[in-house]
Image 1 (spheres, rainbow, N blue to C red):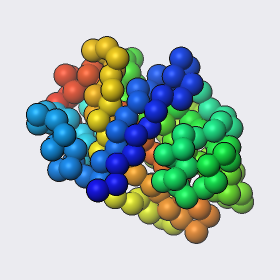
Image 2: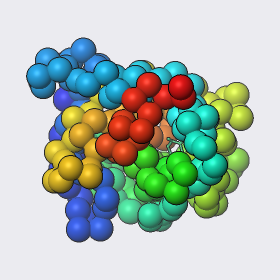
Image 3: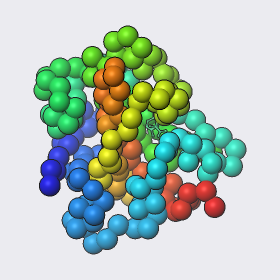
Image 4: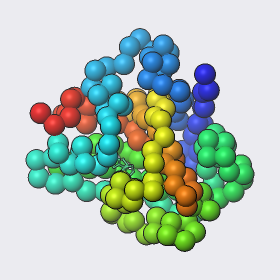
Length: 192
Ligand SMILES: C=C(O[C@@H]1C=C(C(=O)O)C=C[C@H]1O)C(=O)O
């Protein structure tokens, strides 16, 4: 079982806690005393997370860009994407907010080669959800999910996450989604 420990990087600036990645939800479940039903629901959700969150909103959904730019991925992220360990990548960290409050933190790593050609659009998403781009271009295919166990530093931080690679002829990118307690409390089983 491949496990990746993502040590805190720029931890004083990143809002995302260090996370240990496991090949599957079952593998991650063996490491903790059970994973809550609400966490399981969101960890296993198929399709666009953005769309699922929008269905839970009473009045508004928006993306807050926390930081975006050419930064160095962690060694573990570079290994996952099979890119040189010291190569910069376009890194996007956002909050996905429902009805005005953050529900999901997301961290996306986009290798430089993926930004060539049509992929250059990925540097200019701004407040447009990444999923709106990926799921509207058929050449992008999502790989399997890994489950992450976060080292939350306080009760407002996520304790579970998922991540997957999206692949296309233009290249790949790695999307991590960290589920906040606010979402799990308000919408334990998604739209009701
Ligand atoms: C991949 C998706 O895009 C979402 C939007 C993101 C963004 O705008 O940066 C990042 C992760 C996702 O939760 C999705 O909607 O499933």
